[in-house]
Length: 251
Image (tube, rainbow, N blue to C red; front, side, top):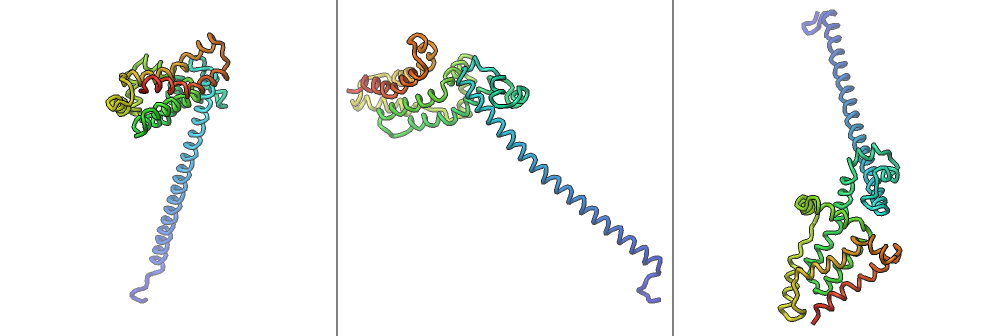
């Protein structure tokens, strides 16, 4: 027998061990492949679930806006919103535990789009009268599109003003009117407008623009306006408010 050859029994044993080793490697590869496939499918399923959840949540928010617009915050019911969204009430509570949380989400979503527009007006280098006109236009646009928002703000401010303001500062580009107030003061010093308290001018802008939407139920009933007539009046105020304020301070 050659010194490098193996007896038949030893050779068979070696071949057996090689087969086991090869089988083990194949089994390991089998397990690894299955595990990788499982992880890929899990990731795919998770993405699909997130996409489905996102679609459902947006559907709920869209439905809630319609119901709030139609019935107001006080008159809206979670069941109405669930019906409009095409889901059951239990699923609605899965996404939003109560009506206040749902409304808060809608408000923050709108505020994140609206407040930066007002902030840009305050911070721009546009002439004062142009800023007044732009301010009124933006506010009336927002109030006509979302007339329930002033009520939500009032409720939150009355309930906890500090928490509400902190939430606004944290989650939105909350408008800071300092530059606007300074601009009013500079226009007075340069003799371009009459002496007026800048704070009162800002309050006049806010109150004249927002109050009709807050008092809408009273205005409609007392003056006997239809919804379409109220909207026409608000459209007219786009020009009436700036004209009234500018005429009162123009020299």
